[in-house]
Every structure is written in C-alpha cells, then in structure tokens.
Image 1 (cartoon, rainbow, N blue to C red):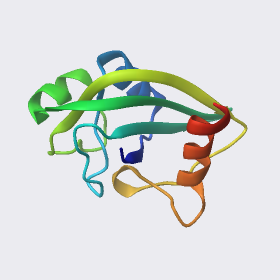
Image 2 (image 1 turned 120 degrees about the horizontal axis):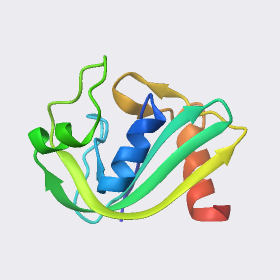
Image 3 (image 1 turned 60 degrees about the vertical axis):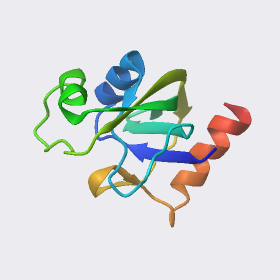
Image 4 (image 1 turned 45 degrees about the vertical axis):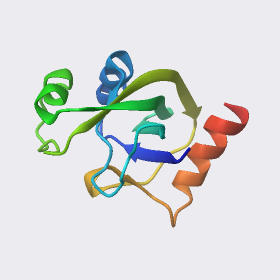
Length: 121
C-alpha cells in the first residue's frame, strides 16, 4: 500500500471529500486502487485532514459536482473514490502546500502528516 499526501487550499474541500469518499489528488501523484490517500488543508489552528482507502476511479465530471466551485481551476483529471477512514486535526502545525496540491517533502510536511496519521493520530 502506497500512502499519498495531497493538499487543498480550503478545509471545505476536506469536508466535501470525506463526506463523499472522493479526493482530487495532485496531478504530481499516480494513485492506484488500494492506495491510502491523505488530504490536508491549513487552518489558523493547525492542519485539518482526512484519509480514504482508494477503491475506484471517479470520472472528472462527477468529481466536479461533489466539490464546491472555486476561483482556482479544478483538475481535469479523474478523482479517486474510496472508503473514508478517518478525519484528523494536527494542532498548532502547518504544512507546505504548493501549486497543484503538492504537499512539501523537503520541508518535512509529508513526513509530519504521515507520522501523525499512522503514529499518534
């Protein structure tokens, strides 16, 4: 099982994705059925996130109906559908989120999220 950490600019997307069991992973990542997808967004109090176990591919037009329309252009790639596993909050932390939903590796953000979700969280 591969673990993918992707980021959103707004916690509303975390809420919508968890409720629907759908996530738009960054186009930088190749997600397969069976992978664990963790989506996070920064808040003023820390990091809000959710985790789903990927079990299907969701066509782009359906995924765009799930997520609220935003100023930023949504991906034209398919989304990932799956079973919602859990929601979490990492208090008093921030993650580096870059263009296209990439969560930072060099700054330690990906490791911090993975350690929280699979360790103490």
